[in-house]
View 1: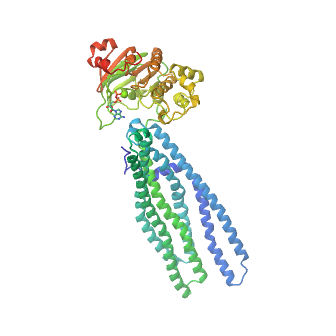
View 2: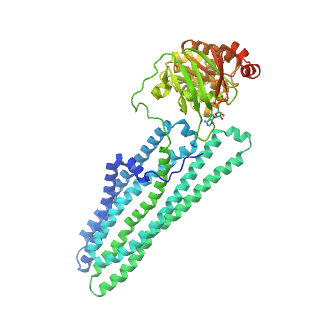
View 3: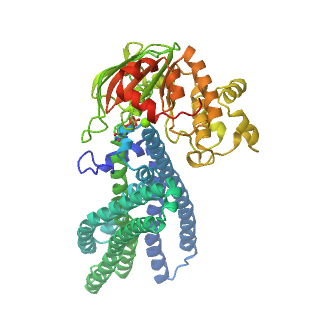
Length: 585
Ligand code: ADP
Ligand code: MG
């Protein structure tokens, strides 16, 4: 699934103005410098007129030539400064957009991310934001400076000869009409091109995220085709946009040529009747050529804005995904503190999305502070979902989850999560070094604490064996570690957080007997001071638990000890007999 395309909502330029507003002074300064260049240039025809006048009256032209050279050099310097200031400002706008988007994406609700392609979101942060650069430095500024220069040139032309100006304006109005027809086409093609970049990002993420599976399945060709299709679609649409942009750009040149010919004809006639002199006609013709650059600038700005608007809409769509409240932004909520936490589910009903079946049909259980509770049940029963709800990755549709008797929603979200150590069932490791992974949840842990936790999770031997020790890179999703090592790294990370509530989603078959026995002792130890919830697949873990919650198809079937349940619950008896892995004794 992908992010909903929206036709409604505030227009794209409002978002752009929001990004640009903090930089308005720099932008204005840069635009002013550019404008100054344009206006200084405007003096050149007047100097030229004086020059021609001097020549025809046999006067020396050294002064006029010097003035012209001075103007040209000053113009170039001011122009360069203007360009630098504008580019810099545009880069700052891109930076701000990337910063705010990445912060926003980190706060997205897990449910929102479930419905998107991470690769597409990535493209929106990296590729779409890049397009804001040109929109800022070229479109906004181009419209401003180009527009003003255009007006100033037109005023000068009016001063020189109003009749010829009328002729010129008629031609420019024609060009404006053509651009008005072309602009929406550029916008549509650009939107499709950026969308294809997003599709390519998603396809890349899919392949690189599961490269081994793709290779082992011999599916390279099929995946290659999907990548090429997306790349080609982006190419096709970009070429379409380029075609219309080129047409728009050339409209300026064409309009000027037509204006030149028309002015020459009409002006020639006016010279013949003596209405104007040759110098005036030459000055006017020079002004006609001076129109080229601001006209192109304005037309380019309109065309460029279409591409930027397409990107802005995509950024806007991402910013409309539901996010968690910013940390400590709302009224301050209490923090669970540092006691072991008691947890309870009261008739919790939950489904992952409105169009999906219920996963929890009224789940109720009580877990007192301290001790170990095991969750067992067939695959798909909803055990992992219990943990997701405790972490508030999702919220139940009805019913209530309480921690220390208080609804989860009444705890400050970040401090609620700070109280929990969560060991995920799958892929619990990030790329980076072992140390990064261990300290992810607690950057402040000192070396002694770290060494202690490495020992209890039996990772000390692994660290000693690795040439780079804790600085060893573990690869994407920890592919350079074995399944059991990954799981132990995740447990060590959770323990380093000194959690009040430890959620351990046991991987089905990743620990060897020796390490498993050791870890079992560690977990039993932790359970003396902490509340431990384990989704258990091993008889050894289950028998150790203080209480066992048996789940099936989104309901709690029974709660009790192993001894009680073996006789009381047929499903449990069957699981115990056939499904629990008997490793580790
Ligand atoms: P268990 O851990 O007991 O094996 P889960 O809690 O992981 O079961 O999943 C329960 C049900 O919810 C399964 O049918 C699964 O397909 C579905 N499910 C799990 N995660 C998601 C998700 N992110 N989006 C939609 N459905 C999901
Ligand atoms: Mg599970």
